[in-house]
Amino acid sequence: MSFVLVVNIRIKPENVDGFMKKLSDNACEARKEPGCRQFEVLVDPNDKTKVMLYEVYNDDKAFEAHQATPHFKKYVAEAVPLLASRERAVWKRT
Image 1 (tube, one colour):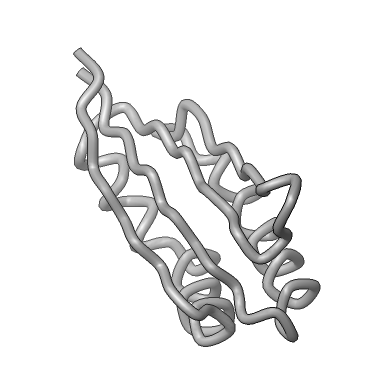
Image 2 (tube, rainbow, N blue to C red):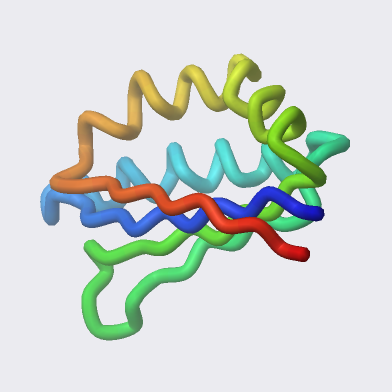
């Protein structure tokens, strides 16, 4: 069974470029983690302030390990303040 996370993000318009750079760095590092199966960054083609993350991990423990990494902690500290909103939903793939 896989742990799936979907994150719907709304970026403050003035922060789009800065946020996307920080997100790209985090996604690149996350894809290297042994428990990460997939990390997709999707951008609304009509509104660059709307982003969706689709992340798949082996299990809950792999996601917990992801949250403990230096790159994730840096992303949360530096990138999340650039957002207007961030909603996370957890799914299980059977």
